[in-house]
Length: 77
Image (cartoon, helix red, strand yellow):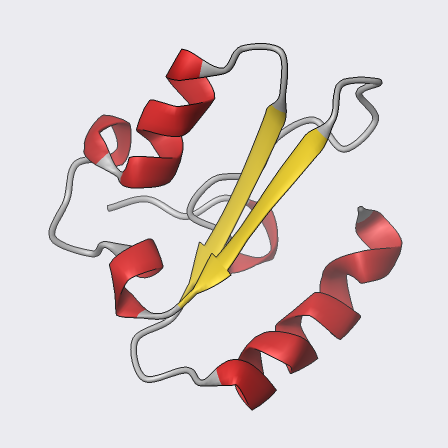
């Protein structure tokens, strides 16, 4: 498992003009036992090349912790 900038599992080009899809979740999104190319967000990114995907997940995180992550990275998006 690899992580990109800001601890994201998948970090796309935030300066793109393409629509951005921000996947925020728990251990299913983190997918620490899954190869990078086999995560559901990586597969979606391959199937929808017209969009830029970003994905962050953390095991045990609930909606409050996810909101905190969103507020922290929102200026970079």
